[in-house]
Image 1 (cartoon, rainbow, N blue to C red):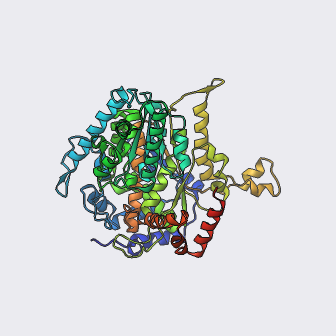
Image 2: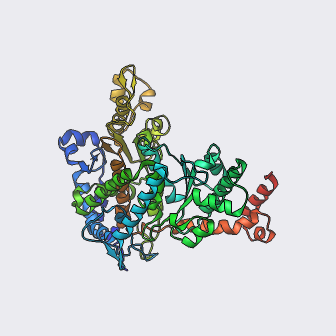
Image 3: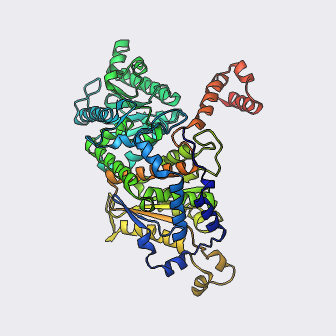
Length: 559
């Protein structure tokens, strides 16, 4: 195992510390003094236009950040990841989500641990495509011979957040008359609400669990199976025999899993199980078989276009010098804000209603990846790591939390995302509503960057205590990301952009961004507490005082 480089011991870190000691951000002054600032800090990443000019960096700071990436081996570790070195040290695994979007016939062939990765990936993609075409074209039918009109993806974490986000984002591309829904929470309300208006005869369930043991997913799968059987029996579509039930499951359930024995035990035909590999982390898996629901909803061609967007960014990261490498630069800016300017959170603000679930997707991607306090060799981290990612679509957020970003006491870097062309162009009295919408996108980053001085407020006629209330300090950092439209390819580019931002930060901090041991303890304790919930006196006695008191409250109030 190669020990991580301690970033705090590098010359670049010392230089950044020196920059911080004398740092006095002045975006107004910097823009006035440097007419080339926007050109120097604007970049093209595939179909994305990325403007970094409103960030709190000078040329000198940015140069030191790039040197930090060089001195901590970001490029070398990225190269190691793409060829299949086992950089997931705690699980001794390769990390190959980038292989999921390599085009067919890519050269040189990718062989890792004796396995032809390209062949494996293309075989699964081909099976997914063939199955999706059968469902979309009506060849796949339910147990009563009716065409599928609804698919319900049952998963959690990476088996849910990615498909949910992309399903919403690409809704205009749904062209087969098939609606997708998603069940993830073990709260029975989730399952009940998502199925209450569906017809069992036209519903197909996709159970997404690599090991087919995930508690929430398997519980929801059993609930869905019971719902299917009850509905089909109530309508007279099947009788109550085991043979009829088994036949119904075979027609209405498929799996995304490699645990074929458990899939078969559930009643799903293993010919309808689509696998993925231990080198695909859950939060990096939406472009694997986990995306089966998306391929059915939008079609194989759209899914391939999504993959092409991912791959375009992968290639940019692997071939572009660090000083022009957009994901690396954005990751470095996050390092500057977290480790030198004290930022604790990061807002992602898409001016696109279709990206309503994008921030939630990024929460798992970034916080599960980099929310670590030990480095990849087991030693303690030497810096703060991670930040809280959050956000909502504009303009809704403007009327909720932008006050804190504009005039609060906390530094909150923010990424603004927008598209020149809307999915649904509409007019209000002859006025382009999308243009009005994007005027807010442009205005917010301008206001955050340049603020409003007391003199400017007074010049408008405001006096007294109101002057201070209406003054905006500015120097609130933002990145603007623009694209022509939210196409499948562009969406793939956006997701891959944040994957590689996350990777960059993880390498600099020396952490393993590809495990998630922090989610395990709570799962284990839940299994121990479940018998106590059900009244087991020994299990109750084994709990701490607070948990026992809460169990007592539950027991006395549960109807």
